[in-house]
Image (cartoon, rainbow, N blue to C red; front, side):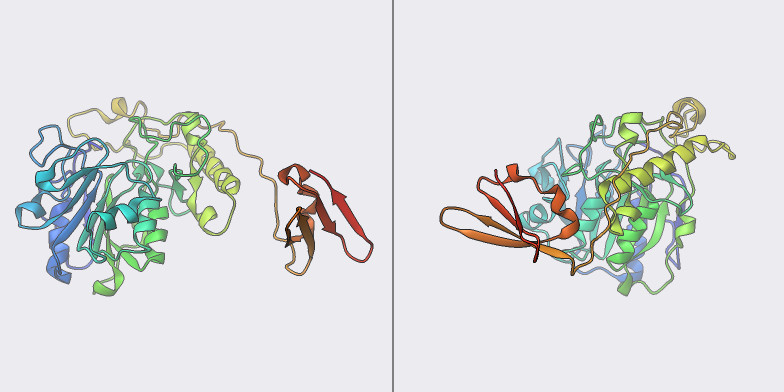
Length: 362
């Protein structure tokens, strides 16, 4: 995403460094490795967005300076490939990322991974950190979603979450990526600490066991900064509150929480001047009013069925009998009225206890 460098905030002794990337990310990464050292000097960049490092249309690779310093690694992009720099063409998702990286020779502990795919970055990060243990990660975040720490707005995982009328893709609006709060939670759970932020662009993560200084508090990452025009109602309806979903809430509950947060943000007055990251453009004009949420004051809020977990002991036996086989499964009694015989090709016998049995037929 083509945004100019904003501000770099680093914890501890990491210094701001010159670089050729979009927002000094590669310079920051080199500074971090002055503290924690390198091992294999191997990088991975997901979302390379160019045909080569010298491509005049490139928005600024996070690994170019490292490559010039003698690092080597893997580049993946949805539109380009180039054997000379190990750039592979592939569409990266949460379900294929680990297999893809391993197939293409990524070590289990690469020194650096950059994630910038303008959409499902959060879920790709989550999946990567279940298997790989990079020393440093930079990941794009959505600063438009800044809301203190009261919500964790996140892009849907398009691998499986229904999108409704949304196309589930970046379209030059503020519908992209996930909030700093959501990324912070995933990183912390995986044993990583946030040590840097390029405001409006990326968060910088380091494996906590390697970092000798305090990380950046979440409160310093969640200020709302408008950078793109307002999203559509259709796209907004696909967002989730990741904190609700990660705590075990249903997808509907996560979308309900997101809708409530978006309505609140849409109705809140803009108390501070618009902050833009295009130095040669008028921010108010570019963002069309400095409000990502301008059209969402009346965003529909999903009406979710409140499904509470039944008591574990309150179960009934359901037996499914065929011509040559029989199966049994214990289901919560509270769910039996939802059982539909049409789901089965043979008779379904439901044992309702001492009083007898009820049969349904498919």
